[in-house]
Length: 281
View (cartoon, rainbow, N blue to C red):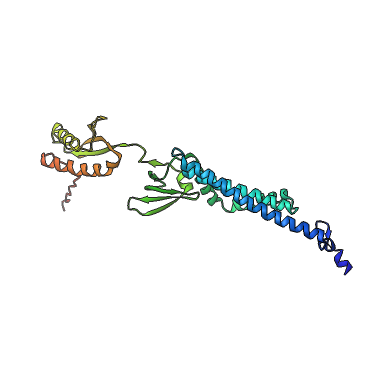
């Protein structure tokens, strides 16, 4: 029995030492201190998180999403320090714990390279904000309205209102086209007429048809000129400015209306033809 009591169990202490009232009181104090540190750390982390979030909510010029992200980082950093303080209370060497966590983090990082690249890209998107919620964009071959930017992926609603998820590494690592930043856009068409057509008449019809639409802007000045002599047609290049919100409907409407106006004006619109000649037997 005496040998058992003299057996070393923890930090040079024997079983007999651990059963003393002094040690039990010390252990109870350490446990209560650890609980107090965890509770205090949790309260402080939540308070700091709300404070950082409120900065983004109370200042319209700041990005609320960015401050939500920073608030989460602040909270987990405070909780991490609280855990380290608890371990130090029980006599655990925190330097070794940090080293173990670092080694584990390296192993996890190597195993999750793809996921971490998405997270890194998400951080860059949130910090530099090349796009934001509500923008109409084209990224990674997908076009739609940005609904949400998370750490791992970006959510879009495409033209058919279909939910599209694009990994952040695909967003950050590719060209981003943002259609909704500018208030106006330049619509562009190419209209071909026959070589026998009166070019002046064709130009007047095209100009009158497009500029009579209230969506067309006279400033900057429209561009309507012959720019190509094709195999079977003389091509007019037409560029007219309009509101960004009217772009798609305006371009589609004018394509149909100009064709109908050219038909009414007797202007021939050619199309490729093929002549088949039967060889003599």
